[in-house]
Image (cartoon, rainbow, N blue to C red; front, side, top):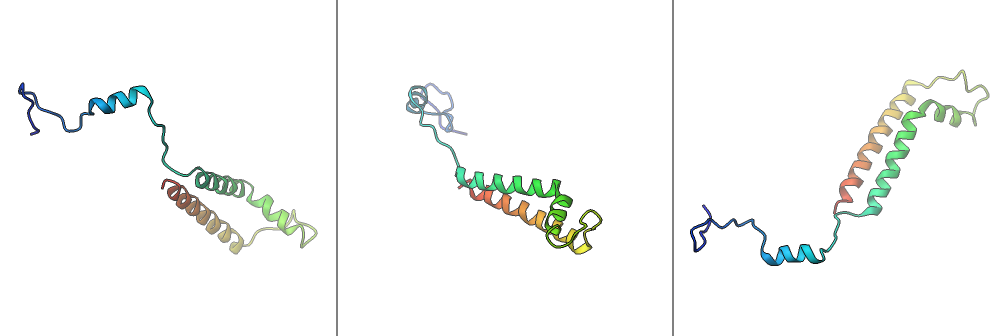
Length: 104
């Protein structure tokens, strides 16, 4: 049990003091947790990753257009597809790590 007041009521240790209540009523100090530049960097990585996931075949053909003539008939190899999946997972993890680092 908590401490008791003079009149017998239990005092809540988590109850804010009068000074805290007056400070919050008059002019509270606005704070935020985190670093917005890290969050912006992670957002850019996330957008880039989403773009590369949505347009994977188009990006493959765009890069291949500088090496061969008929890119419409080209098919990505199994290594190419595996590399896509690995890069997508790595980019997701990097963005997550940067988001977490931005909380500090």
